[in-house]
Length: 151
Image (tube, rainbow, N blue to C red):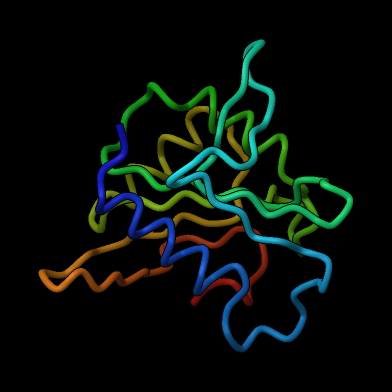
């Protein structure tokens, strides 16, 4: 069960990074959805549904980008992350999939290693921290998609 902190990070990321406030090349037909509070958008996964934390769709309903926020890094969700990656587009300058993984600060290297070990294409791994007042900070760690996203 996701925690309040998890949901706060998801909301912050969706609000401030999809798109960035000053981003001028964000497609006008992209819509940012989250699956906190209530399930909004799923993707097919192992004969059922998986609800990624953040799903970017265009007005045709096609999935473009996906973001997942985790509080602990473990192997259990790897199959779901692979499906997220394969569902997201690869319209990045490098051809990597538009899949972003957000992990607690300090776990970024382990996250990259886990994704690489399982051969999961990703656009970025980001660290996050939440201070005592509830302010969320996001730090880019590895960006394999578009260099403009490394902020």
